[in-house]
Image 1 (tube, rainbow, N blue to C red):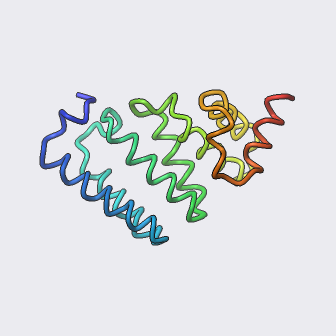
Image 2: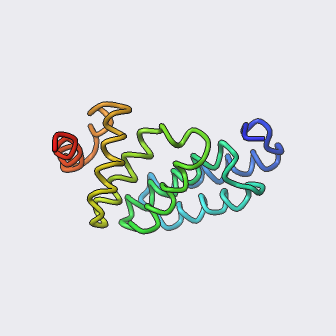
Length: 144
């Protein structure tokens, strides 16, 4: 039941539309509206929501956009949940974004774990478009 192909077609189509709308809004810097679209996609998932592949990218999108919007608490909650969904455990982007949000929230130990995991999974390239302080922090903590 975890394969996205097994979602009812109408639900899958609705989630795709809401996700695309959210992506467009996020690209336009309309973060609150984007988050609302992603949350609507989340609500459209059948229970138990966390078992669907779509849950990973929906929660990941909420967390990513929340991070960009400076909504650190929402980012941490969404990304922490995304990691528990199918394919989330070893997703370096989710780990990186979670680590960034945790570091911004002042939780250095948890941030070091998440950022270190992202670095181990994907190498320093994953940090290419990010503020250099996150890679520097992860590298320093891995050496310590």
